[in-house]
Length: 131
Image 1 (cartoon, rainbow, N blue to C red):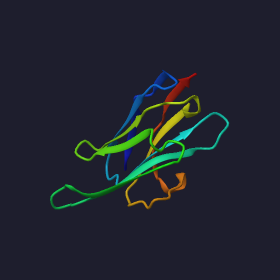
Image 2: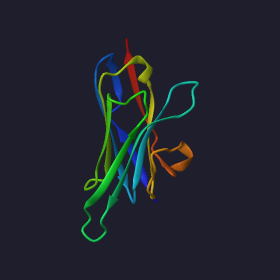
Image 3: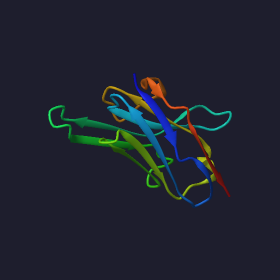
Image 4: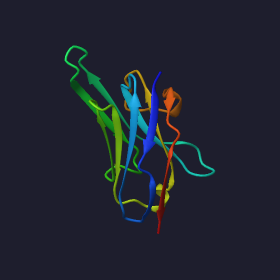
């Protein structure tokens, strides 16, 4: 069983920055950020999949993928020692306003993912960007 807890949301002006974190427990080989604005469907933001050596518990390879709407502005990363996922969000825009959710699955992900691919979800953290 994987548990996820997001933190770091808040309110910021357009052009500002925020960093979201997601503390995870359990096997989280692929982790992602999704977001959902009121009245809209849940939207994939970015994901990261990591391959680790079970013998040495070191990262052998990792890959990151971003939605076009956030590419160049957001950076997803994962601290495997702490099993914590982060999302650094820069140059925020009002259209980035949404509830942001951390998601995980204990299998490797390809470059394309959907919400249905993820078994575990956090409760979300609100990000509000004012103009």
